[in-house]
Length: 169
Image 1 (tube, rainbow, N blue to C red):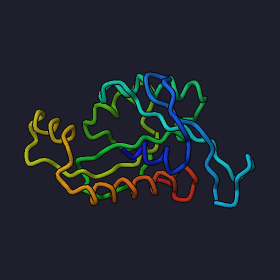
Image 2 (image 1 turned 180 degrees about the horizontal axis):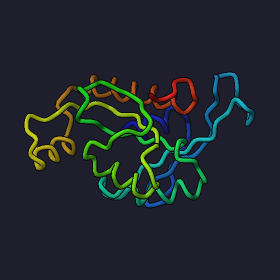
Image 3 (image 1 turned 60 degrees about the vertical axis):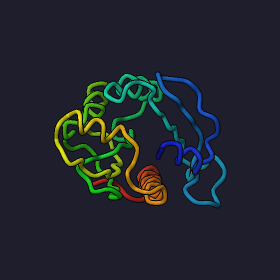
Image 4 (image 1 turned 45 degrees about the horizontal axis):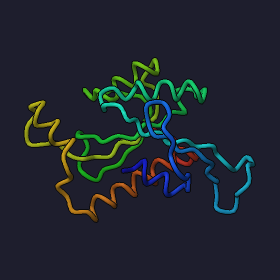
């Protein structure tokens, strides 16, 4: 949902099937007045892996290689059960907290020093793996307006990171 929001926000246009995912590319102006391919413009690509979540690295790794990106220029946006619903944070590196999708990405990228924007979804009432899986794969329990607000804040946070306005901690 955040990736779709970024594609719309940045006016990237229609995504193409590449790297076992959906890829939209374009340019993002550092300020509204900068519309040329000048120093104030950043090239961006938004990739939505179409793999299973736990195998997302199979999409992210080849994309990084094709774009020749240093690890610190990769931004992964994901949900986080260890953050309260609505909490949005950015960080570079750190632990993977048992997140199999992040483990796959780390494996394919050769390290965990990529940047992340984490959107808090809260923790389910049980730590049983099946309960947790159903919780993160299920529909939000919060109302639509609350979900849209979190998506908007995650988009804003991702944009700040991409533009270098807020370096991740």
